[in-house]
Length: 103
Image 1 (tube, rainbow, N blue to C red):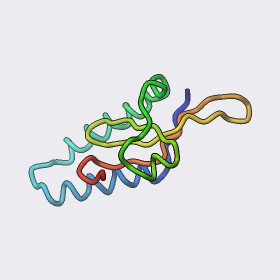
Image 2: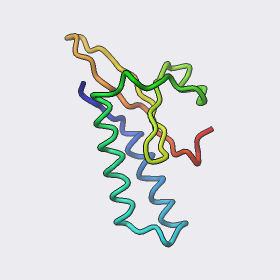
Image 3: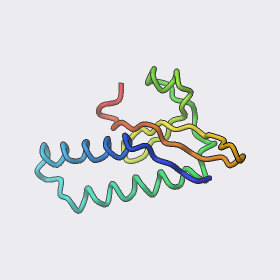
């Protein structure tokens, strides 16, 4: 399945790592880039593995929207499998939050 990522997900990842580098002087840009690369590789892999992950269980907004939840590099991702008008099934990642901010 193809994977689509909402703009909000990109913004959440960027904002978290910008703040992390400001607050943790030992966290360098090269390390952050590697982490972000792993996140995007994992999100792309959802095209193959999206059906194996459970429904969201803690975030009430995600639960109400019927999102499934995937965790990688301490980020929680909320996604749904959608069927397009032509019958193609896609994975749409709608939201993301780091574990430190996840309630």
